[in-house]
Structure formats: C-alpha cells, structure tokens
Image (cartoon, rainbow, N blue to C red; front, side):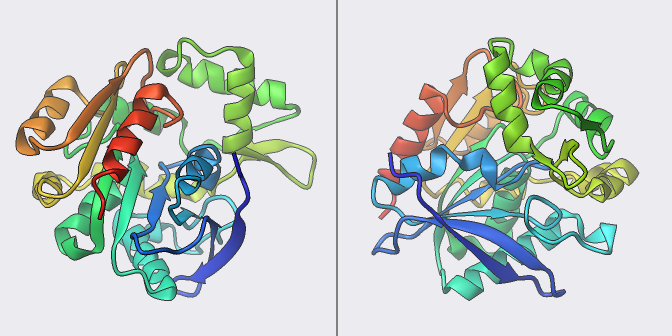
Length: 288
C-alpha cells in the first residue's frame, strides 16, 4: 500500500495555521475528508487514508485546532463544535471543494451532523463512527475523567500502559503492541524528552464547564438531514457513548443506511477493523 502523503496547511478565520495531510489526487469524484475525535489528531487515519486513496480517491485528513501540528488557540472557548465546523469550511474554501464524503469519528461525526443540518449540499455522503444524535451520560463522564489532565511519561511503554488503564475496557482484545501503536497515534515526544498527549489541555475547559459544548442538546434534526444521503453507521459493540437504542433509532430514521456493529470494541472503533473497512467500501461504492 502506498502510504505517501503531502503535509499542507490552511488558515482559520481567526488567524490560526492549521495542518492537514493530503493523500491521492483530485479526480471527478468528491474527496473524502476524515475527521478525528476530541483528543485525537490526523494520525488516527494513518492506515485508513491510504487504504481509501489507493482506490483512486483524494483524501484530506485535518488535525483540528489545538491538536497535532495545528495551532493552539489563545481562547479556550473556540474549542467548540461551531468553531471546528467553521474551520472545516475554511479548508473547503481554500481547496475549492464543493462536496465531500465525511468519515467522522466521535467529535468528527458531530461536526458532520451539524454541517448536514446547516449546509446539506456540502455532503456527498457520510460515515458516522460510534456517535449519534444522543450522547450517553456514562460515555461523556468517561471522557471528562481523562480529558485535559496533562500527564506525561518517560517511555512509550509507560504511555501505552497508561492508555491501557484508561481505555482497556473499550479494547479488551488489545495486546501491548496495540497499546504502543495507539500511544504513538495519540501522544508525541516533546523537546524535554517526555511523552505527552498531542493536544492543548485547554480543549477540556468548555466540555467540563457545560455538557452542550461536547454535543448540542438535540441533534436529531441534524441527523435527519443525512438520512437521504449515502450513509454508513458504525457502533462499537461495547460503546458507552452510543447506545443500542439510539443506534436502532438512527437505522429506523435512515432505513437506507449501511449499519454495522464492530464486535469486542468500545468507543471508538479504529476503522481498521474488517467490519469498518467493509462499511467504508460499501459507502464509497454509492458515491457518484
């Protein structure tokens, strides 16, 4: 598989330099944009992006503000869904993209739903990965228990063990090599030789202050705006964030959607699982 990409930047409306990777080449089909979760960055798609690009798609993978190589904001209140969507729209404008296929994990899925509600013509199709219009309190509480704590570690093994302690219930089948791989996607080696999480700890402030900073109170209208588009829905079997009941309701409201449960995984599937890759392939086959 060709894993090559180009590192590129774009500018937010408030002057931040934000970073994305571009895989593949532009063609007649709309590009695919992969959107990561709250504490993550573009490295979450290091395997998926070339998998899609190899099939002839242009793939863009941004790190949202405050993550990875994207600039940190001086104002923590901008770490909120409306600003992330505005940043994404600035990327679309720069790249002259009128329509795209969104693959959104967790926060990225929330961004996708909001975009569908307010600019539905922008989306050619979407995959929502372990997220829906209703966020389970237990899942949100779990996120609040670790986001923004600013821990650092002396070695990758220490970082991996820490991730295992926090997220072990979501990935019960993981061995230590899997945890090290997750650590290298999620953390970064700093100039002081310590390994720390690759995001601005201030992203936690709006979420800890108000639940609706993580998810607006009623996203069903936003989800319904996706119902007539090519759509794939994924849920981790062990997810605390997306309930079985909400997942079933999503399928009822979007009866044409591809739906799959990824076994023995919680929040969130990595999109490297067989069930996830099959859903991606099925979705892209529907895009004109």
